[in-house]
Structures are given as C-alpha cells and as structure tokens.
Image 1 (cartoon, rainbow, N blue to C red):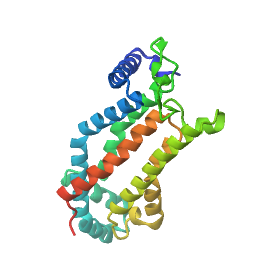
Image 2: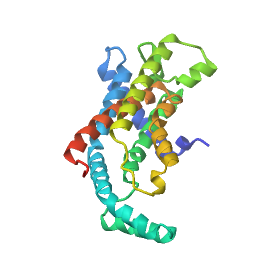
Image 3: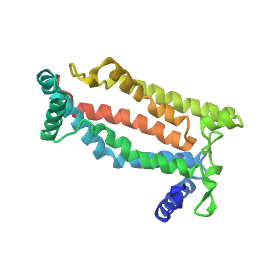
Length: 244
C-alpha cells in the first residue's frame, strides 16, 4: 500500500518536492545544488528544533539531579517491582519530566527523513518527473543508497567514496557523543546493568547503520544532523551542567 497515494500526503510530498527543487534551482549553477539545498533544509529544521533541544537538556539535568532519589527508591522497593515502578513514575511526574524525554527530537525528525527518503526514491512525484534524481554530490547520485549500489549495481567508485566519507564522519561524531555524554548510572537499576549499558551504547550507532540503506540525500541529512546535535549538546551542557 502506497501511503502517499492518500491525497493529503500526496499534496505534502508534492509541496516538499517543489520547495526543495526551488531551493536547488536557487543555488544553481553551483556544483551539488540539490545537496546544498538538503544541507540548508537540515539547518533550518535543526534551528526550529532548538527549543526541543533546550527542553531535552533540562530534562537530562533533572534526571541527573534525581539519581540519588532513584537509588533510594531502588533500595527501598527493590523487592517490589510494581511499587518501584509506581514510585519512580510518580517521582518523574512530581518533577515534571520523563525518563523518555530524550526521544522527542528523534521522533520529530522521523517524518523529515521519511520525506527525503521518498523524494529521492520515486521516479515521479504527483504525476510529473522527479528532476531531483538527476542531481548528485561529487558524482554520486542523491537517489542511490550504498546498499542498493552494492547489491543491485552498478558499482560507482564516486558513490562508494562519498558514502564512505559521510559514514566516517557520522561514526566519529557518534563516538565522540557516546564518550562525552555517557548516561549517569543508577545503582541496582535494570537500566544500569552491563547488558543494558552495552545495548544503549550500541544504539548510538543506529543512525550510521540506517544511513547505509537510505538514499544519499537522506544520508547527507543524517550527517549534518549528528554534527549539529553534538555541537548543540556541548553548548547546552555548559548552560545546563549536570550536578556533581
């Protein structure tokens, strides 16, 4: 089932196409005009999401401040999981925060990545040819994914090199983020178990893995996003430091 056959979503896709194509035309005849348009769109979206990042930093600061009280709850109700869960949720509720506050930026960006994925995947948009597929970045087509090129061909050294560069940038940025912003462990908490900590550490690289399967335009969006996120978190950590 094609969800973009639904008229409102089809109109949204066509509007997104018109905006991105118009922006690419504005940057012509610069090389990689459409890729530059994707970068500009990413920066606009991330700018609009700055209030969400501030809210996330505040929530992270609050969770760190609550860590001693969470440890006390673990000691008090460790043998009663249901009571522990209720008391933990009530503590977060009293502090007007949530243990899942950090997922909001990811959820808000999902529709944008979905639109970019679709825009550089379809040969036609709303019945007219998709001219965005004719654009490239350093010779790598914006509508090609690395996995598709390696499995279905044809192989392109330019595409492989461009994807390799973007993936390397994402991996390095992700590793810096993982090392600098390690979660504060809570004694005896299931979230602080070795297995859970390893899983949370691996989840940092989910974006890098995801970028293997999406068109180059979407991978470019993800690359700019992880760089922006790291810089923003460093700035906001100074503004909202965690308690020692």
